[in-house]
Image 1 (cartoon, rainbow, N blue to C red):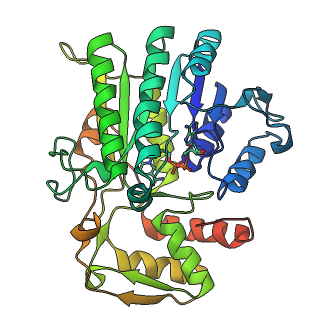
Image 2: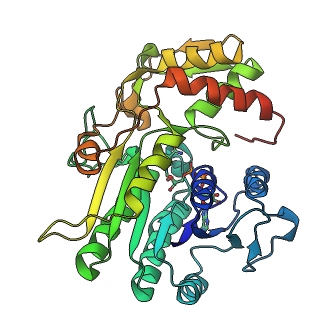
Image 3: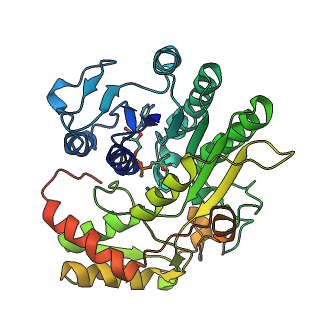
Length: 344
Ligand SMILES: NC(=O)c1ccc[n+]([C@@H]2O[C@H](COP(=O)([O-])OP(=O)(O)OC[C@H]3O[C@@H](n4cnc5c(N)ncnc54)[C@H](O)[C@@H]3O)[C@@H](O)[C@H]2O)c1
């Protein structure tokens, strides 16, 4: 299949492209390589995919040295160039991962979150509609589950109370996806992801922050006096699930071709246990500061994990990696690559 991956230089984008090219798909990846703090990490990921960072220029395709993969530095907010690319390439599938992520930072910079995550998604949907794309795969976030949701989080929970701009921008994008599926019969599948981690992870994720703080001997603050429960999803599980779906958009009689799944390991993991597992895998002690802060005051839940009943029932698939097995792999990668310029 001919597949466009947006956000190809990102954490999940890198793993996605890697899997797709190994499976023999023809892939074009785009990314605007924004954010000076993480651009080096993005270039490292691209170089692992056979793209020479020195040859990257705006809007110019670069062929990978190892696979049928072309990378183009392109912004999804450039509606015209995006449409032109989709016209020229006639993609079968678009895997839309490009976004700015992070609830905390979205409070400081709300506008780019709306522009990129919401308007950017609209641009991708519109380019897909106008060029006959057969399936769009989009990643939303568990963060859309606001105050009215309770663990385990289900797809049909009321998600009308987003607790951050990141949450609001992703929820708005989900709604745009539904309306394109409904109005234009454009097949869309959405995965709402619950804290994904693995090699080449995004620096501002919880697992990366914990690994950094432990390595640098910095204290790790845990709110709600240390009692938090989370769902940690190993990146291979996300990619496996994505591969299950890209060939098979939802097709239910009388309904738009739209599916939304909550995707996590669906095992509640105490935050302190997760820290302890990274501590053990890195072989260095964590300094933990437990503080009474109420999670809701900073847009967090006490307990947050996915109900994956729908994923299992409709796709006959569920994530399999337990954190006890995956954290040592993540920690080994972290130790080997700690000198790469990860800025948090
Ligand atoms: N990693 C997680 O735990 C997690 C959890 C929930 C949802 N998600 C979602 O999954 C997707 C991928 O997340 P990730 O962790 O790989 O993030 P990431 O930041 O590593 O990757 C996103 C990529 O999108 C690119 N990008 C941003 N704005 C762009 C624009 N205007 N045009 C083109 N490219 C642009 C960035 O340069 C980056 O490389 C995102 O949509 C994110 O919201 C991730």
